[in-house]
Length: 180
Image (cartoon, rainbow, N blue to C red):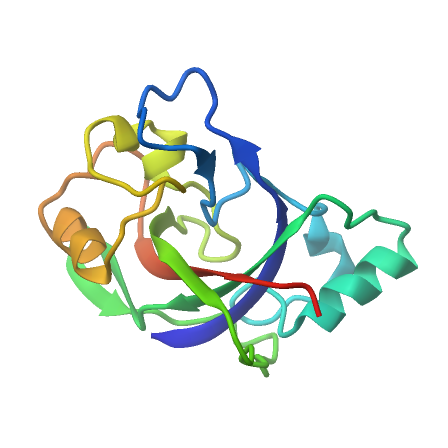
């Protein structure tokens, strides 16, 4: 797994339409349920993985643009260096027009693993466990994530997400971090 960065999100409780009763809230990487702290692309401070190198970058954007961070949760992500599509596993190639210098957190809590579509090959698009209600059919933890990398990998290889969203798909670890 390679460090890909941070995101501040507004975590939501399990929506009523998601009938996966073991899910309490949504920690998905995509912003479909638990939204990112802002529509950050226009600020052009993200790295080559379309996340942020440090919590300080997120704070500076929020301060500069009067975006409240109260009520957000901070997450740190690492990604498998391969992505999966109809042809199998292929190298994940980040957007080289941006630089990356991720500051790895001194401490964080691994919450689980998400499978995320990256059809446009930029920011994360959809997390089928939540966006496509796949958590109703697959075993997830209370945060709508796979408990292990191997479960995410096996479900990808077995074609479980084939008709959910256009790929490629990437596996990302989701870790919670306390705001510094």
